[in-house]
Image (cartoon, one colour):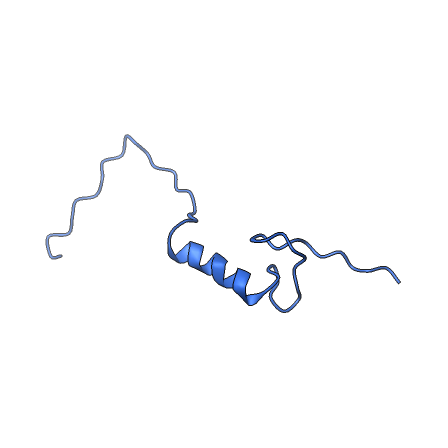
Length: 60
């Protein structure tokens, strides 16, 4: 019987587990969530430097 090779955890590089996939544990899943919440990860956005920024809302 051939053992199934699992991709590594993106946080600690240990084999991932089905329960926490793609992570190896709840700890690594929490570390990843914390990185998103602290804005260490970001989805890139194309900014057009020629575009005029929007005016602030006077009601705010």
